[in-house]
Every structure is written in structure tokens, then in C-alpha cells.
Length: 103
Image 1 (cartoon, rainbow, N blue to C red):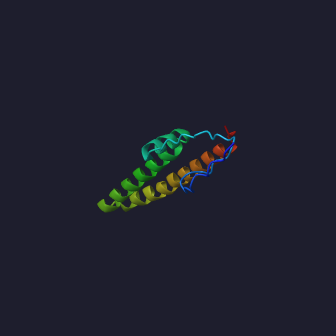
Image 2 (spheres, one colour):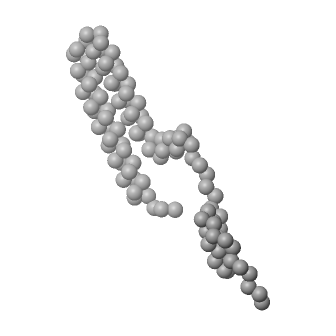
Image 3 (cartoon, rainbow, N blue to C red):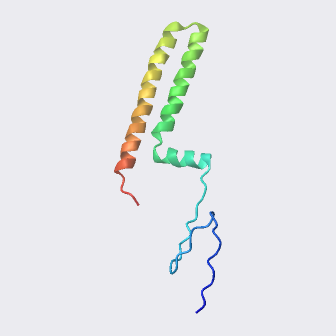
């Protein structure tokens, strides 16, 4: 049996191994919106906490601009609570994901 010359080196191709046929893994690129929706479905409390924090912050700034200092201070304290809720939701989501059995 005559041996043929090996193919020239191509850095973009993996080396050929006799008797091995690799399975081709198909990649699907996930869009930013798709990733956001997937993550929001996995842990829906985080986006709710973010929206709550932004809402309370916005209302607090409006109260501050109007001169209602007392209400503005209450809203800034509520913002801290909303941020705490968001961080707690993040931590709970990470723990649940870590404890979930791998597929």
C-alpha cells in the first residue's frame, strides 16, 4: 500500500487522527435580549428588584426637586431597602443555581 503525503499544516483545522471522527457541536449564538429573558425567567425577583429600586430612586429625586425634603429622605431609605431586596434575590438565585443538579 502506497502512503500518501500528509496534508499541509493548516492552523484553522484540527489535526487528523486515524480512526477518529469528531462529532460536530452546533453552536447557537444567544442574543442579548434572549439571554436577558432566559435569566429573568430563571430568577424573576432580580428584575423586579431593579425596577423597584429605579422607581423609588426616581420618585425620591422628583420629591427632592420639588422641595419635599421629608418625602425625599423616606424614598432614599426605601431605595436602600429595595437594593437590599435585589442583592438578596441575587444571592438566593446563585445558591439555587449552584445546588441545582447539572444536566
